[in-house]
Length: 118
Ligand SMILES: [Zn+2]
Figure 1 (cartoon, rainbow, N blue to C red):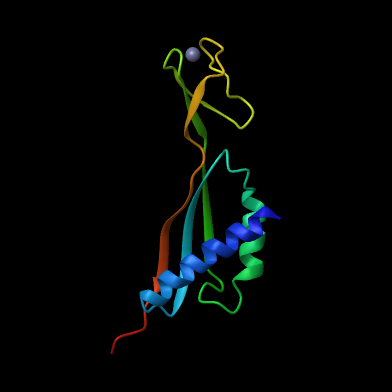
Figure 2 (figure 1 turned 60 degrees about the vertical axis):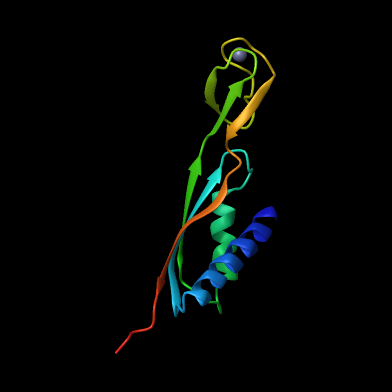
């Protein structure tokens, strides 16, 4: 499952950031994934819950935001949003389109607990 590898990378980046920040635990991780990445958010959640125990991210909430794909036609410059399977220009029917958004896989935010300073 492709989501396991992605989750492993995200988790390792999050745990590294938490260690660098001197955090004692991770509370929340916000991710953005694009509609063209073929990542299933449910599978990501499943992998997250399977892989976080025993790490700083144990029990952390994973929030996944999905963003739609957007393309621009190279023939007529129309921009439109679409899903994975619809990449034809809606205005002139051209196949010559460039993807503007939809390939995102980004960690937007990591919320951590820092040690109490007394
Ligand atoms: Zn067009």
